[in-house]
Amino acid sequence: MIVLGIESSCDETGIALYDSEKGLLSHVLHSQVELHAEYGGVVPELASRDHIRYLVPLMEQVLQQANLTRNDIDGIAYTAGPGLIGALMSGACVGRSLAWALDVPATEVHHMEGHLLAPMLEENPPQFPFVALLVSGGHTLLAHVTAVGEYELLGQSLDDAAGEAFDKTAKMLGLGYPGGPVLARLAEKGEAGVFRFPRPMTDRPGLDLSFSGLKTFSLNTWQKLQTELEGQAEKLEQGQADVARAFQEAVVATLSIKCKRALKQTHCKNLVVAGGVGANQHLRQQLSKMVKKEGGQLYYPRIEFCTDNGAMIAYVGCLRQMAGESKSLSIDARARWPMDELTSIRI
Ligand code: KG4
Ligand code: ZN
Image (tube, protein in one colour):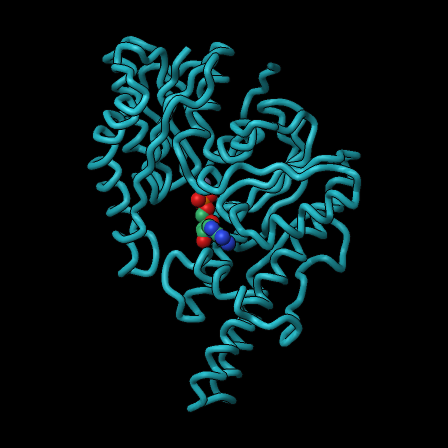
């Protein structure tokens, strides 16, 4: 069965073809980074319009790459939530309509389930059960995963998601958009031990997270530094990198502490990290070290499947379609969609 997957929940249009027997056939991505850069963040209306512009040409491209025609498609899968409602509706309308026109089933996919199962696209996929750390721009959560669709929420961010904290801190440091990867690059130039930022909510039991205070701590440190080093451009530049490093280290250390706790609590050995912040090299290294010490293994998708993409949607859509899930002719999208509302499938 060949499924065409459509991702359009935020600022990336991703299209892919997944074959239940051969695996991923092709995938393409159009990023809207340049479109939103001058505004310093995603402008929802511009995002929706851009998805509309790119959805069909990208579908043609993905078919061409796989040497297939639209008649080879056995099903359509599209992200139905959570995300920006207009952006989601663009993909949902095109996806549902195309399925109707081709007379094939359509399946709604939960964006975070896509992220969570993205490591399954790799050569050495994780086996159930495992703990998943999902760290994206909109969500940060820890889940105990026992099967596809069986996600027990262990903890989540009570305020800013990890990616959001990266983006906002980057903005405060004057680093532009999208801040996460830029801040991570700057952090490499920072010196170790110059600043030590707090590890929020690690001094009490539980698996919830909070990054908003850390963001404020970074701002205060940066403002103080700017006053102290006024007129000393070179020192200030180094100071900015030191703040970036301390911020990244604090986020990574906090996530690592919580992941270790989650593994202990669930008696799991293996950890999956996915979502945009999962592309962060320092996070991968630290989590890998921690999990190995605990006798397990860390799994993650290749970098391009950490951030938003169509491949993860085509994959989950294919699994769910093979399990008989298909959507009526109505077109729905959900800005919010709790993961525990998903149905489980045993494969
Ligand atoms: O999963 P994703 O592509 O979109 C959402 O579903 O939100 O995640 C995007 C987030 C952004 O906040 C971005 O700054 C962050 O992931 N991100 C990173 C890195 N690459 C992307 N954060 C830290 N380090 C990175 N290397
Ligand atoms: Zn995402």
